[in-house]
Amino acid sequence: MNFYRIQRKTAQVPIVSLIDILFILLVFFIVTMTFKKPREVLQIELPTVKEIATGKVADTRSVIAVDVSGNITLDALPVPEGLLGSYLTAFQNQNPGRKLELEADRRLPLERLLQVWDALSKAGIKINEVPARIKAGGE
Image (cartoon, rainbow, N blue to C red; front, side, top):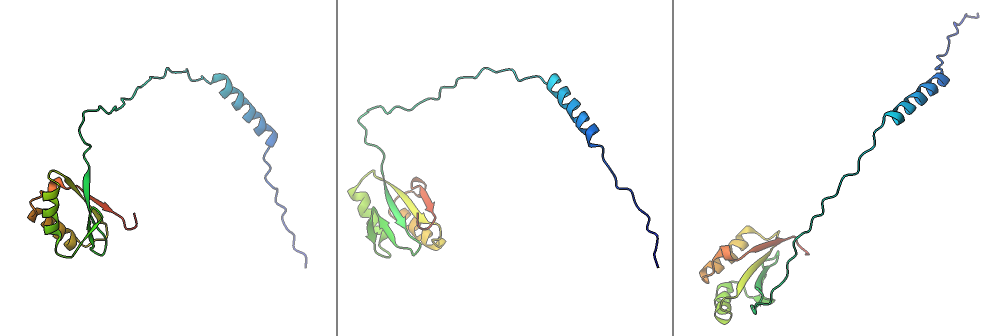
């Protein structure tokens, strides 16, 4: 048995007329386009820093380093457990006026960091005068 199939027309888009419209739009945009006017560039001179020889020694700081396991070094000198306060007192006596800097590992337990700050305050060093740098392990 043969069934009659309805043949559908395929939709055809007239491409030639679309190309004409595209060409007309292109010509329109090219003709009506206004170009940017060149603007003057503002010259900025940034200030520079010049070091003046005043005879003063540069402010260098000694480093108290604490690693992740809690080991403490004072200017690359290992400090035994619990003796940081006495080491700091002796350090202050040998180097009067020398400033300190705390360098701690990011994974260091807060309790150990508080012990270091407590030793600093017991040695007569103000904690706010000792900047702390917290570093990631391995840096």
